[in-house]
Amino acid sequence: MDEFEIIRRYFERESSDEDVRISIGDDGAVLRPSPDRDLISVVDTLVSGIHFPQTLAAADVGYRAVVVNLSDVAAMGARPRWMTLALTLENADPAWLEDFARGLFEAADEHGMALVGGDTTRGSETVISVQIIADVDPGKAMTRAGARAGDAIYVTGTVGDAAAGLSILQSGLPKSGDVDFLVQRFTRPAARVQTGAAISEFAHAAIDLSDGLYSDLEKLLVASGVAGSLELDDIPLSPHILRLMNDDDALRFALSGGDDYELCFTADVTEEQIREVSQRVGVAITRIGEVEQGSALRCLRHGETYEYQDPGYRHFH
Ligand code: ADP
Ligand code: MG
Image (tube, rainbow, N blue to C red; front, top):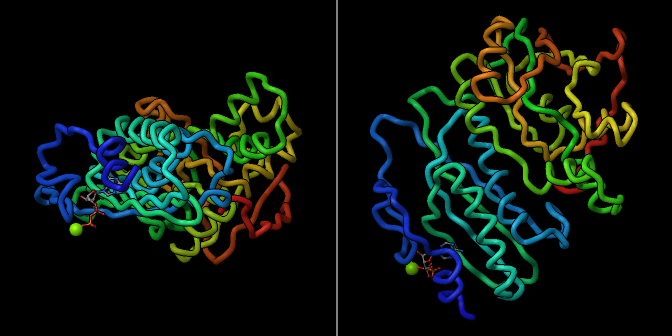
């Protein structure tokens, strides 16, 4: 199967999006942005064996390749519009491509995004690069840089599940409802796009959690030029992770595990406002700390300072 056959068979699809003037098939895609909107461009690359295990199902690879990018779009409070796909393959396995495309379009369809172009090449390993073009009201994009001393720090959903799920995938723990839940949090992460747009009304700064809560929150604080305290007792851990391991292990996955794709943000609003947004988008939002003056992230546990050493490396990043 040659490159053109692959593109035609697996990636060319009808789209009802009238703002896609020219799609797959020409030298470039022609897209018509909405007038008076800022455009946001994000790209993320997944390398087989580094960002996902080589044994991961092709549909999950396709799904995750889109979601990791959608998560960046969510963290900017933006609306995803179009995507392109650069694909490097060792060989053109039709069964793999079919499943990969199904997973990819599943994630794209959940957010009404059309695939408008890409590149397909042969190489010595599987590398998947997805780029998304998103838009947002002028000047309204959330960034990492706006946190202010006195803000509360919030996180969406639960953290640590995906890293625990990946570790289970690799160690092959016997199946159970809790195990399935954690594994699915790795294979099928949710991009908090709606939540990102909702909190962008009031959040001062935001970041999505791809490397782990500790290091991602640290990046936000550094970008904002502030310090913060993290209440480890308040970090939302799922009942599933807590049934499979002790609190300390669950906490380690939450702080340094990564791959959660939840949002962490800072804001200065009432509890009532947070509750209202959380109910509206159907996603839990938990207060986990406070922004302070200075330049460090300290952790507190049971009311005392907790010396946390971030490992500073990632198995799958
Ligand atoms: P060129 O040689 O001009 O770079 P290509 O032959 O690489 O063009 O691609 C032909 C068309 O197919 C282009 O419109 C390109 O955007 C699209 N395309 C190539 N690979 C993919 C892919 N993996 N997914 C979606 N579109 C693709
Ligand atoms: Mg060309």
